[in-house]
Amino acid sequence: MKTRHTHSAVIAAAMTMISLSACGESEPLLTQRDWNADNLYFASSDMQKQDIFYKPQVGCVGDPMPFFDPVARDFKILYLQDYRPNGETYHPIWAVSTSDAVSYTSMGELIPTGSVNELDAAIGTGSTIYDNGVYYTFYTGHASNTAHTGGILEGVMLATSTDFRNWTKDRSLLITGADGYDTRDFRDPFVFKGDDGLFHMLVSTRSNGKGVIAEYVSGNLRDWRDNGVFMTMMWDRFYECPDLFKMGDWWYLVYSEQHSAIRRVQYFKGRTIEELKACTANDAGIWPDDHEGFLDSRGLYAGKTASDGTDRYIWGWCGTRAGSNNLSSLDWAGNLVAHKLVQHPDGTLTLAEAPSMASAFGPANALADFRLSGEDHKLMPRLGYTNRVTMTVTLDNPEERFGISLSRGSDSDSYYTMVVNPEGNGRRKINLENEGPGGEGFIGNADGYLFAQPADGVYHITMVNDNSVVTLYINDNAAFTTRLYGIARNCWSVNSYGADITVSDITVSSR
Image 1 (tube, rainbow, N blue to C red):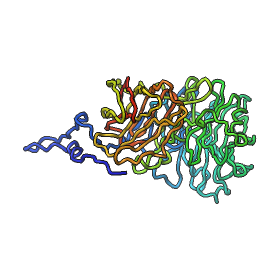
Image 2: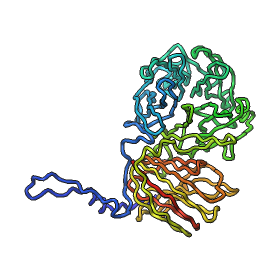
Image 3: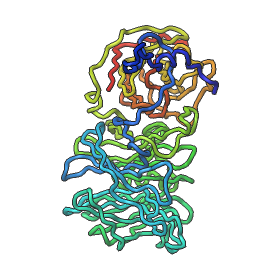
C-alpha cells in the first residue's frame, strides 16, 4: 500500500495553538479546524468510547454469549474479555446489558478465570439459562497446563448466581470428552430446555477425528448423561459457538465455521429438529438458501442469538486489524456488533439493523439527489465518528455495479470501497476493495456472500458506523460488516463503474 498524503501543513495548522498575547497573561487557545473548508484526507483515529458497536474501555470483546433475562426483562451479553496483552490466565467472562441492542451498560467482570493450574485457566464460550430462581452459566474451561488436569485440555464447567452479579463456580460439575469424544476439543456448550421438559446441552467436539455436535441431557442442570451425537459436521469443517432455537415454524442452528477458507457465521434450518440434523448427515450439504447459510461477511464472527419474545438478535464480534492497517487480517476479538434476524416466508434468514438504531442518532440531515454516469463518483461531506446513512441507489441497467467508498478525500492516493458487484445468474456480492492510484484491489479477508439481485435495480441502503466498525444493509436481504480505519472526519463517496445511476433519499445523522 502506498503512503497517503496527509497534507501535513494543513493538519499542523489545524492543531497549532494561537500564540500568547504580548503581555503573556492570556491562556493559549486551540485553533479549531473548519471541517467544511476543504475535503482533504485526514488521518483520524478511533475514539476511546464506542457504544453502538460496544467496546470496553480496556481491551476488546471476544465471543458473545447473549441471554434474555426473564427477571430484569433485558438482554445480558456475556463475553470473553480480551485484555491485550492477556496474562497467564485469560478471557474472564464480562457482560453488558441492553434493552434494544443499541445502547449498552457495562456490568464488568462476572466470572473470573481459575488459577494457572486449573482447567479454567482460560475461559471459552458458553451459554446461560435461568431456572427456578437461579442463573446457570455453562462455559468452556481451557487448561494451560494439562499435567494438572489429568491430560484434559477442554471441558464444560459451571457457575451460578441468584442476582446475575455475584457468581459462584460449581467445581462439582465437569463434563469432558473422556466418554468417547475429543478431550482436547470439547467446548462451546449451549443449553436449552426442550419440548420434552428436559434440559439439553450441545457441545462442539470431535468423534473419531470428525467434527460433531454432541448432546447431553439433564433433568436438573447438574446431572448430565451423554445422549450421543446430535449432528455431524460436514467434511473437515468445525462448527464453533452452536446456537439452537425455534423461530416461527422453523428450527435453526446458527454456528461459526472455523475453517480458514470460510470463517463466517452460518446457519441450517429444518421444519423439525430431525430435519435440521439431516442437513449434514453423511455430509449431505443441505443448505438453507442459495448462499450456504452465510449471514454476514468475514467481518462478523462468533455470532449467537437471543430473543425477547418479539425480536431475535444476533451478536458477534468484528475484529480489529493489526496496526490499524486496513489491509491487515482481522484479529481475534474487537467490537460487539448486533443485528436483527429477519425471517422470510420460506424460512430463510437475513440480517437488518436493530429497530432502535435510528432513534439512537440525532436529527437526520437530508442531502440532494444526484445522478452519476459512466466512470464517476460523487464526493460527500465529512462524516462524524458515529454515523447512520440512508439512501436509495437505482441502476438504469440492473446488471451494472456501484460502490460506496469510505476513508476518502479529494487528494487520496487510495481509499476503501464496498463494491456491490454482479456475480452472474441474477446474484450479487459485496466486495471490499482498496481503490485509487495507490490501491491494491480486492481485499480477500473481508468479502461478503452471494445474494439475490433486485430485479428492478433498486437498492435501499442503510449504513451504520461506530468509528472504524461499519455495517452496510441492503433491502433487508444482505448485511456486510467490516473494519475500516479512517472513516471518522473524512469524506465518503458513491461511485458508478460505467453505469447510469440515481442516488436519492439521502440522509446522514450522527451522534
